[in-house]
Image (cartoon, rainbow, N blue to C red; front, side):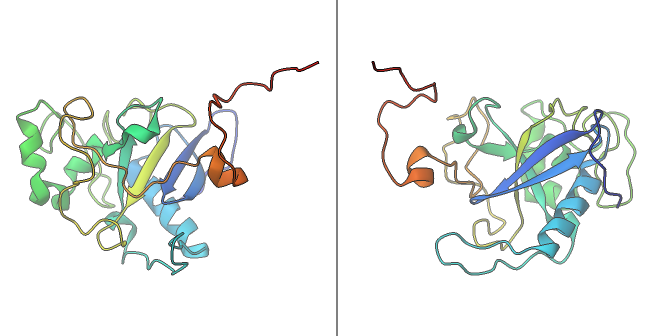
Amino acid sequence: MSTTAPSPQTWTIRLKSRKTTVLLHTNPLETFSSIKHQLYTALSDTTLKDPDTGDTIPLPSSASDIQLGRPVNPHDASRGFALGEWEYDTPDALEEGAADVKGKGKAVAGKGKSKRDGEGGVLEGVKGCPKGAGLRDGAVLAFRWRGDGIWDGDEDVDMEEGAAGGKKADMWGVRIASFEDSYGVENEGDVGGMREFEG
């Protein structure tokens, strides 16, 4: 694993779980496997805690156990997250029903020409890096792993299939911050603009 120093060419990826956001500087052509290793190292250096109970959440045995999900709507993360198409090349994803996605025209292992990077089987080709997957600088991705207290390895059930444009999606345990969370008061009608001048 190599850490990427910030530069004008690097991207910032926001990785979210619960109320935690990890900011990673990465090369847009770096593999998702390498990004998972950087995330794993960052989580190992700190502690991920459940915001409700304060309990520490144990990390998985390796970085390859982490799954990344992309927002169903990049402009509105509250619509939920769906498993990133780059995850469908891992053996676990294939066992858990990635073959079901085959009929829907999604990317699945064995399709097209690709190479493996040797660290978890993520594609090095078109979909194996943030730029190739159509992400942008500042992109938001959710992360989870089996047994993290939110996801037990079964199918996602928080949102109905079809609710997000035909994709299965849920919140992956991500909690979107609200005005009330930040300031402890409810501000009805706040649309995020500047305060109106009263004079």
